[in-house]
Length: 190
Image (cartoon, rainbow, N blue to C red):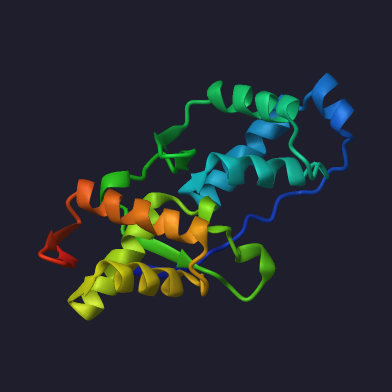
């Protein structure tokens, strides 16, 4: 039985406040932004910075993140004592009590569109856990089969370039963090 836990991705239900982008930038509601950041992290962590920013600005009825809004949000995030790790293309925010090294969950799509994350929004640690769950069930697999089955487990039915790149990164992450090993042409749990 796998020690990797499958869960349904749960999206934070934030209060909705309609603010124009101009007002948001000229008089940013920093205290409320921080409160919403904390709320999202509490429910959705680990979460990529890009998705975290998107969740918060969407709750202010802002649907496009230009460079000024992104800069404001990054400044607010940097001013907060948050636990985070770096990945290839993003930062990942964690609950304060979480230990990224012992994180063992992966979250799949729920029944609504909001729970469907773009593969680029899924932290590498989470994809690595899904990859390990596949290996715990199958034993060992060749690279292409492992990445294809992991993508399917996570709900990605087509191996487009983004899915392929993220699966490649999950394999590298898993090897680097000694979760899996390569023996000849097969990958297996360590």
